[in-house]
Amino acid sequence: MHHSTKEKKIIHIFTLMQKLYHGEEIYAQNERLCDEFGINERTLRRYLEDLLRLYGQILVLERKQKNINGKKVNVYRVVDRQKDISDTLRFFLEESNELSWIITMVHENDPRILNTLSFHDKEIIEKNIQLDKEIFLFRSNPFENLQDIEESKRFSTIKAAVKHREYRNIEYQYDQHELLENVKCLKLIFASNNWYLAIETEEGRFRLLRIAFIKKIHYAKDKTTYQQHTLAKYRHYFETMQNPMTLEGVAIQTAILKANPAIKRYFVKGMKPFFLSQRYIETTEDGSVIFSINYTQALEILPFIKQWSPSLELLEPQSLKAILKKELSQALSLYN
Image (cartoon, rainbow, N blue to C red; front, side, top):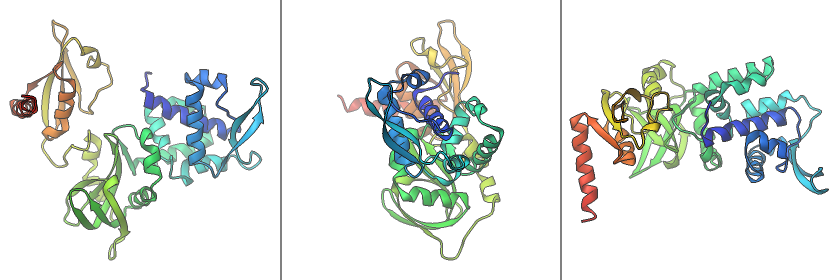
């Protein structure tokens, strides 16, 4: 199975957590471990520093003599190896907000990595995955944004609101300041390298709020929790959402595109799609690949088409082609 760099990082971090859980002492100069991961010492050190920053409550860093040119090195280990090690696993999976979503990400990227765990540990993880599926939705990889988002206590507050299906009052600052009262906190979504909170407003309107623009979040005065059936209304949207520009409750349209031979290897049958709805259609005689993508509005798909231009051609529909031509003409006019 081929993994992207970010997917590999997630799996490496989780594997380090497993090794610490089993009582191993880990240090960045461990050539065997670097070879196992296919990374260098500097990268392994960065991973370990991330774990210490996030899990300082149960990890300790100390200098120990290792067989590395007779020098002492920084060694990372669980604080108390004599205590019930299941407490450590429970902390990783349940008590810590910092990486609670990483288990779901590992499961989505390569569930085979969980096969090495004991039956008891698997039960804990499977329970955690089911719980977090109700909280998180991933449409891109959140690991690179971990440090920024996890430094904010607001994220933990929002997660709790989603988990317990709570009404909240939210102060939101995008183009202008808004006070959104009695909103239902539906789901945390990571897409296009940003965290979003899906909400239903007091008027019954669905919105995505970028978490970076949420200034304050308070308990609603007169309402506490909403019913599960509210989430059921948006199940189809959450299952088909492709990026933050995907609209809810809007008719789906289909674009037909052609990737020329220069970029066809990224679009041939079997390659990882760029969009959830992307479908291979055929390969033409000249080697071009025809494929389709569903969309709800132009903004959902046009940035992708522009990114691959001129090697990617939009064939249909004509209405979307007209919008694309207009935007490209406006862009070119800036250079005249």
